[in-house]
Amino acid sequence: MRLYYTANSPYARITRVALRESGLRPRVEEIEVRTRDAESDYFRITPLARVPVLEDGGAIIADTRDICAHFDTLEGRTRWFPPEDDDARLMRHVTTGFLDGVAVWLRENMRPDGQRSDPVMRYEEHRASQVLRWLAPRWQGVGRWDFTAVTLACAIDIARDRGMAQGWADIAPDVMDWAGTRAGCPFMAETAPGPA
Ligand SMILES: N[C@@H](CCC(=O)N[C@@H](CS)C(=O)NCC(=O)O)C(=O)O
Image 1 (cartoon, rainbow, N blue to C red):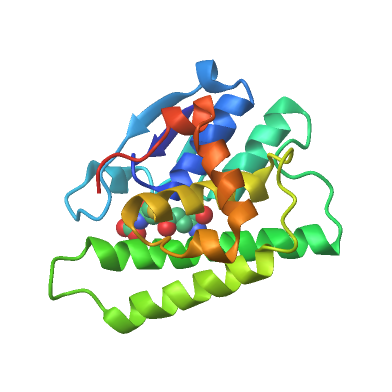
Image 2: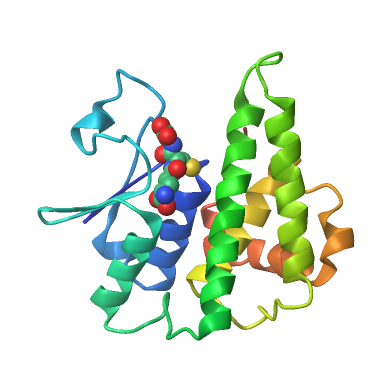
């Protein structure tokens, strides 16, 4: 199997953490690719040229959720997607949407000076603070390490690293403490993003 990734993609990081936690790392070659480049060879693997993508035999699996679900299938267990009640399903929806918002902010933040959209960044900051306010009384993530938890940990870690998380510890101290502890775990540390 091959897993295509970029070092700074929080989506790819989720799959790289899951790969390691699932004990499948020895079976998978990780290949770092270049995205956002019209000349990239990566378009030969997927016409979207997005990461992450998992190649398994002839199959191309091209979405973070589907890749982690594939790891569950290979392991024959439900590590990443345990059975969900309505609350757990909503929690997964909110945390994946939170990451999507963080990703929009990060994309704006990467633009050169003068080309960033202030309204877009302020809106994503607002959305993120709403999510944290919602999560604060609900998150009991101490022992939990499934798709929802890894998604939240990766979203918070890169937001913190890139300067989006100012004030978040005041809104949701327990969530931020949990994310800080998780960021120090070996597989999170091994897959930490590089410089912006
Ligand atoms: N819904 C996709 C999102 C993947 C995604 O947006 N990846 C970004 C990196 S964080 C990417 O490859 N961007 C490159 C591009 O859009 O050209 C998933 O869950 O895998």
